[in-house]
Image 1 (cartoon, rainbow, N blue to C red):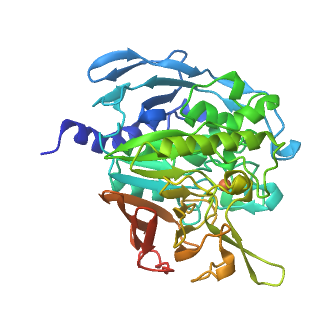
Image 2 (image 1 turned 90 degrees about the vertical axis):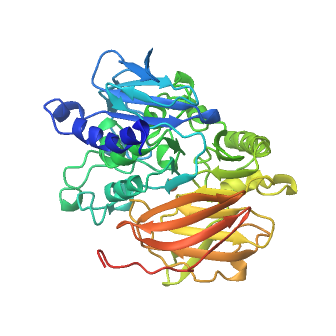
Length: 474
Ligand SMILES: [Fe+2]
């Protein structure tokens, strides 16, 4: 017999759809959202984005508690962005953002009569998605067909992933891609909002993600699209788990060095496992030099990741950029060039000859490369999974079935197992299979499994090296 909580969990997506129905008010401000992000120690933080002047109360286990104002409605002044001035504008956030910490172990929470998903004591089922926005970027002449669900399928991915009934959702970063106006000659994205304000956040993330936001609490990793010079203001205001502070809210560009970094934190999964979230999205493709302010931040991140990973028997380390993955680009002559790792991170993490990753880190979870990928090593390195395949225009340059020996993503890293799925949209799931063991399934947009893998400690392997995409409905 289903518990009242599980019944509420099942009905909650319907409730959200009901409140998300168009209304007169929605025309001007866009509908709000209600969701839960997990912060340091796994503390659930309830968030509500709402057209109101004051925050409503939240019901936690039958007791009324206040929600606090996280951010008032505001138009943030135009700041330098990653785009040209004519492709930039002030970020408008017309709704109030409210927040409330929910005590770990609380069983039920609701806002305005709408149940919020809380984590179970032990988290055994995790959805991993990444790179979910619809790419509209003038400098790359990249205009994804946001209006075509086949070419921008994040809503379908989110609905399928929600139907899998996860205990937790992990987003590995890059939420907002609608940075510039859709040109008049591009009907595929016609009418899309753009920039870094609420309308773009809603179209690119909160509306398509609604069923999945209703299904489970989220761990949110920041992507480089959420750097201060891009969608950082919305990241800080809406998603980042810590407090919203002027010191790092990405509003004043003079404070970007602080705004672009967050200290690592651990989210316990129960049973001795955890996810440690790191914010290294600001790293570049070139090595970070010691006089760069990011150098000290990444040193801090390594020390913290090392310390946190020693507190659990199994650690997933989640960051946006793959530290041990491979990416492929086409060269001028039509050949394929492989790129390994992220030099901006590795140059600091491996400084002085120490191990690239702390010894108690078992599996790296990342996005950024718009494919699905798995790498396991015979050398003493953690496995790497990449889940940057959940909505954003895919990378289509093929990866090799077996990477050449000189394609190591880091010095001394010897690839033992490599699996990749290029040009296929979907999501990945992790199911606990025992002590330091997890089952991985890769799913397509239609909810069909395309690959199965297993994780045992630092090692992983998959059934298929290069799955083939099935035709829609086939
Ligand atoms: Fe990225």
